[in-house]
Image (cartoon, protein in one colour):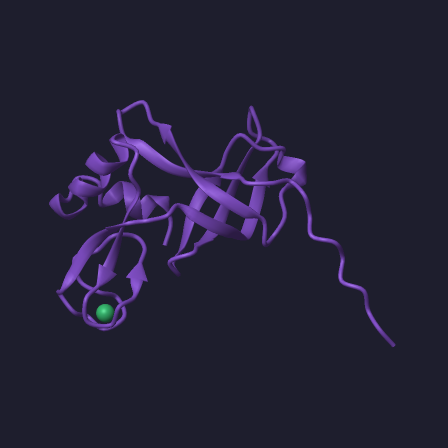
Length: 140
Ligand SMILES: [Zn+2]
């Protein structure tokens, strides 16, 4: 599950609505009408129960960082991350418009489309806040 999957499926007719919605600023996810679960990346067949009864649903575009990695040797450095969406799926993406030294696991992020050179709108995320939750105090 990575952006390679997304890019590779780009030419497939089943993801065309995804890219068209993205250009209009809407982030679509695929939901299964049989088991009710969202999945990522978009597929016609549900990866959980193999139902073909899947449909597009607009995402709220909110999530939290599940894991991240900063590519410090790149120019400029950038951050890639697994973001768990509030709808459930976890997707690999880029964290943009951020201080890469202040990212943390569990950080709330919000969808921000980034235009690609080929005209596609790539779903990325930016931090909602850079405030870390206070460290939990240990008792005993
Ligand atoms: Zn299903």
